[in-house]
Image 1 (cartoon, one colour):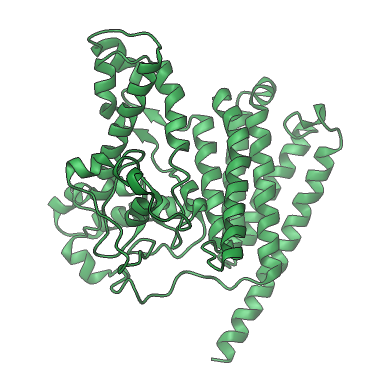
Image 2 (tube, helix red, strand yellow):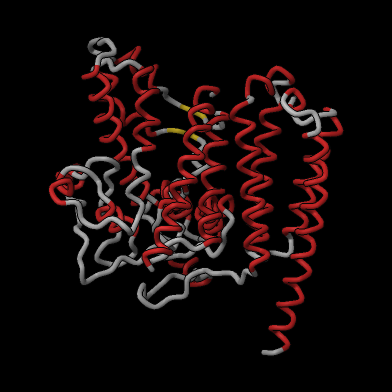
Length: 426
């Protein structure tokens, strides 16, 4: 937990700088692929995912160390070849997990957030799930366990394997020659994120593309078919927490509403997008029928709201950075504090992105979030031990929380007046 947090303290600024560089590069080249609100939504999604991971908010039914201990046919030492084997084993497992997430209704919920952006850029790579609480796919590492690949090797290779999937989420790199035959390139992954009928549910590979070629899921990007990004049932929100649970909530409602008792249980494991016929007829859900002619989600945002959304984004990054860098200190104060802190991070993301959605309830969420923050300061006389580093920090944060409520309230009132005026003018 603490070690992963320290790795993220280095990785997060690097990813942020690369995302901002892509924005600048696209602007300079006249091909801007990064919309401001979409970018912030992606960044906040990344924050929720890494917070969940660092806090260990998941249940492992069968762990990899358990598999190695009970099933290994041999035991091998930590040599370079073992790390290479582990990398290939993780990629093989990743291919099949990824494929299942796309084709099984229930498992799609754990991946939908990654595809929810209607853009394709480095920022959308950070859209990772918080809804996969129960980890059941460790079984795909069975080959590695049988060969006795040590658990600590997997623990080192896994973050590297994940981070190596960041770079190819871009439209600014064209085809890459002979590398197209070996590794996943931006061209391959553009196909994967596309909702064009020609491309959908193809190229599941994470690092190596030959898995797709071997198992029949490969599709080459065509110059005459430009990829269109997103999902066919658009999420219509910038809030990553709501995105994470939209699909499973629809499944729950469908299971409750259908009169077919078989479907109540079977729909979870049907192909992705399946809905019982009686429910689909009575409770239709919007689905894009023509991928080349639909309106992307794009809430009206004034320059002031764009600036304030970035202020909130940077504050969230500061809060989460302090958590990752001070886990040991926070746990010394009270072991429950890190979970309270994690809850505060999630509330911060929820409140900020609800305002980006122009939701009037954003003020309620902001009052709860800031109220919790002020409550921490009053209860501790500090902010989770930050006075060790900078004594006035708690007072500054207290002032920030008050200001945040005031500014959010001002935006909510402003948006309400704008909406009323728009309705009045037809």
